[in-house]
Length: 88
Image (cartoon, rainbow, N blue to C red; front, side):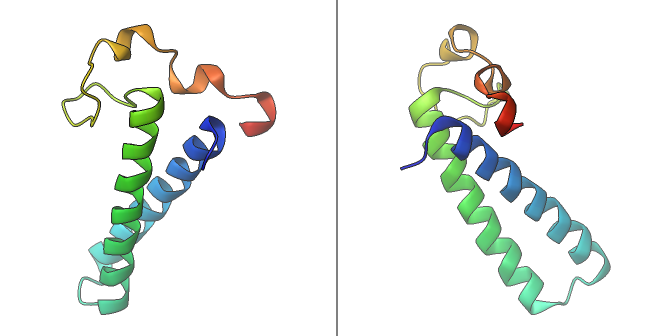
């Protein structure tokens, strides 16, 4: 189980990993290990986002949320509003 801030921090890490691997693959598109790593990172990121959104509400409002109740976007605090100073 993840608490909210730890889960959000893990999402940020995996987003960073995904962007870095994407940039690497732009330059080395035939690198099989990087392709496999990107696929694994993306799958993990999707699972983390889904877990967060099921527990705490949507992270974005661009039509790709797993949250059924879209009013949670308005009613819930923004993801950064609940971060403690030491989590930033």
